[in-house]
Length: 468
Ligand code: FAD
Ligand code: SF4
Image (tube, rainbow, N blue to C red; front, side, top):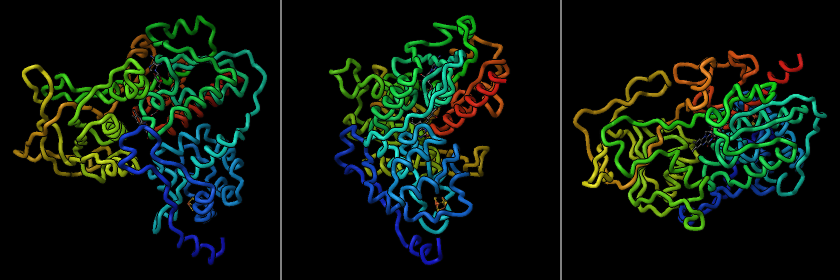
């Protein structure tokens, strides 16, 4: 790009994603972001400098050729742009919607130093949606069957990526999933208004059309053991069971009625369709004054879901300040617009119940920020004597998840770290020959794209080891 064009690119403002009106959307489950039109996508793409050394590629955990696909948008080759992304990212419609781009590709974009970075996530979503809506999906080449069978435990982004990569290479793939539906957190955690389930279903249907078999309601470790899988003749096993064990605060009153984990709350609503009660038989957990404890995506999703289910007042209680909220910036912004109240630098100390054992208040303490801790964030310090109470009739705890030991406890030979996550090398190999692992069960709760990146590396390792 010559200097004149660069100056013009600098002057152009980042194109805003059209979205539903906050008042309307806080009462429905339809998607908040409406997507770029081709015109908006082209105008946004024109801002890209096509850097000689594009830092954005390094910022992307699966190294999508960002300048490459953005250039194809500039040239109005939208399907080719989608195919370019799919060379390294199998689920662009999902990643374009949920990746924390501000910490990844967009965080590295040189324009972001003085101006706003290219809206890489919005453009990625646009290409994937365009390809889907125009029915131009390219069917990748599939090698003939090679006679080898792979068992994948868990049907989230890590498991789906391994299935997608290995089925193309001629492997017979069977996924064993505990729930009655696939997608992992994409299906039971992230709500419809952020990620329409039809997109996740379509990806799963596509894999099934490629020959991947999914066995549902298979809680591995209970129904089948690792030894059973070896006896069934699998050549390799990939464990991708996520980190689904919710953490608790460990403070007095936590077992009162009306205190639930975000896992339970979101699973009921998203997977069990509680929002459509009584058409579906899952009653949702009601409340009018709802308090959500935590500051990540899970907390934002719970708070915004509660608003949509009719709560009058939804408050997020978080022990650090706004700048340290770990949730995606866009989700925080959307939550604020929709009317979620943020009580920052505040931490619960105990829950107070009524005579019937129902929660009615939370005692919280004011916090201040101190030195940086091991996570690199300023550590929250309680301010003595600053306790006060918040009225509440439902509390949702969203302070993170740990590895669920249900499967790993049945196979003590597998090496775990002190938090119960499976230890692997950089390519997903565990200490047991033939067993691989990836995603949140290895890293602890992380991101969709990091789980997919781990799946990709493990698929390469499995293929390498089985063809040596
Ligand atoms: P999972 O998605 O957890 O999938 C694991 C699968 O294994 C599940 O289907 C589970 O049912 C199954 N399973 C578990 N145990 C067994 C067993 N014993 N036998 C058989 N199957 C089993 N990340 C982002 O990048 N952006 C976001 O905006 C974002 N928002 C999030 C919102 C919520 C509410 C949550 C909970 C997480 C969010 N994340 C987000 C994190 C992201 O979704 C996860 O990091 C990612 O899904 C991990 O993928 P995975 O494949 O390792 O595990
Ligand atoms: Fe385009 Fe930004 Fe990547 Fe440079 S860093 S190629 S401007 S998206």
